[in-house]
Length: 306
View 1 (cartoon, one colour):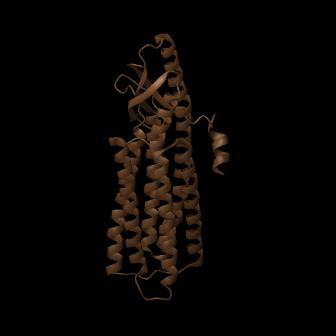
View 2 (cartoon, one colour):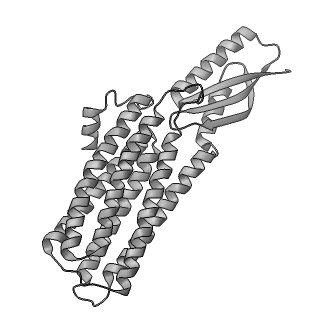
View 3 (cartoon, one colour):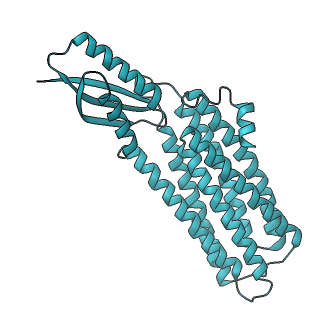
């Protein structure tokens, strides 16, 4: 279904290196997230109030925070697609990482609030009322979240988006959390135990752990991670395969956001080589790396004796 929506609403959807196309992907996923999470909030808050479940009510507000995260994601992807300017010569791609970090804070905050409410529910448990219809609605909400996990994971791979990767992780956690609530509601009918509060504690821990993991990954990207070894090998291979290139050294790669990778490398050439021919070859290699690897690279030539 998501592929059909992409084809319908994302113009030139196959050109994922284009910033405007990536923006369209982000806006589409964020808009779908807003509608889905609004639907889930209404379903869960109604269900939680009917069956008197703190876990379901907390899960409902978790979906409401997810709605806010979707709005922030749309805002972030629009900011990241802005072109370079005088103050930001490499563009604004890292806004995606900042947005992902913001989403992680929201996720962690929701988990912390759920932890507080669940602890009170364990101390002073209330009876959770069983209702087949409301349980069925919760099952539907699990299926919706699993679909949201699937489409966000798909988009994250297509456009290499940390925002969608974080959202996919959050959606999977929500599906697991709601499944646990359903199981606790059913068990509560036959066992005299405060499953509702205990499951709330487990869910809150899961949510906070997810938020921490997303935050850690976002911070690492903002600080600058070591480039992927496959990318390093590919760049070295492209340069070394150039005519007249004897060796390479001092490769440096800088990540300024998805689709905005810059690099520089020193290529060793014979000190007796024709400068014009070498310059032409270097230009071709730079363009090839740009087209096939998506890396904007500058190659410096270092003359070496034969």
